[in-house]
Length: 222
Image 1 (cartoon, rainbow, N blue to C red):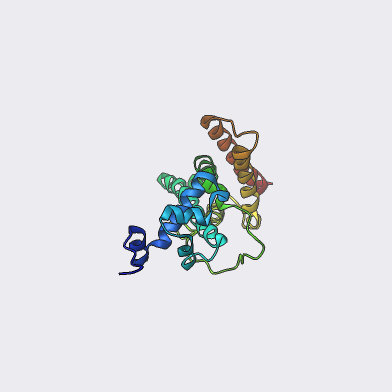
Image 2 (cartoon, rainbow, N blue to C red):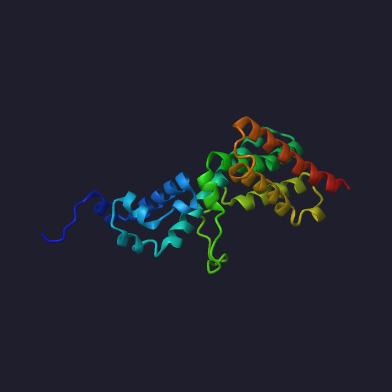
């Protein structure tokens, strides 16, 4: 029979798995080399199909990169959720709220160190024509249904509910906390701290998160 393709890749495509295979390949590329490594042609090669087959699922390179970016954000959210979950053993709501807030920062920095390719892909600069208000299909969220930024906001709300942070001081607090932790992450990945060992990075991460927490609480007490 002419033009019949019985290869495993073609069979996978017929069963609707090609999109998943391409996305998995894109995530692997990001993990290995960051956002610059996410190339549509290489993803199709790894998936075992011709490049044109990808356009049924990802119309261009940016579409694949956006999908991989969502997976990276989801993985980051899950790493943060694991840190928050560990604080549930604390029965007193005030120490629990503080520990959950610290957990967001520590989970963020640990993920950056252990998954630098995915971390950089999660925060890759996006073209101006990418609609930031596009409907969210949930791909960038963790098991809680929240993305990393929402998890940070959630723990800050917990600080308010525990009576640690006055409601009037809550607006915008996430931006101050996020900028400090993200700046440290970049120093560790591509700055003067990139040669620091794991123990040194962890010590600095704990000091930074403590400083951010103390700054918020000191501001609240002022």
